[in-house]
Length: 173
Picture 1 (spheres, rainbow, N blue to C red):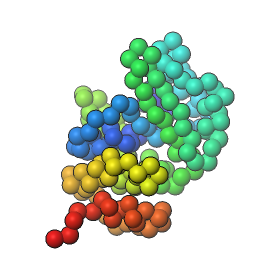
Picture 2: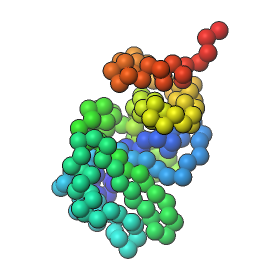
Picture 3: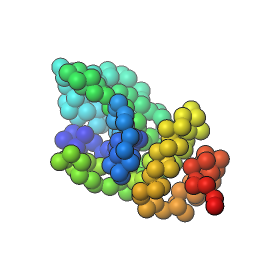
Picture 4: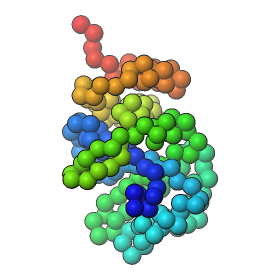
């Protein structure tokens, strides 16, 4: 993404790994700020001889979505997969892209979403699918990363995530 000049950040389980939470996963999740003008650069960065990249028509459709645009990139030799989510018009995702963190990971530098966004998105995914992996990730992030709780709680209220947030809090003595 960097060589193509596409703004990105790592989210999901790999983001939790970058913050020190050990967790296994099979793919990497990325949020991209992608416009129609970026599609040609994306196609050049992920050539069809080496990668599955959706057809241009699919990319155009996904870029046009105001929210929840999504596609996959798959490295054909290894079958490693990236789930690419588009920032669309989501102001929280745009805030996260402006406040992403540069980290060194396996001798490379990459952009990772702020932990507050990782937590908020995991709360949303927990609400949608009730997978306890998201609860575990949030609890573990809260143990190892200093987060802006007031920021999280403001958005928890705005997004209707109070119930999910409470599940992730440590038990009271």
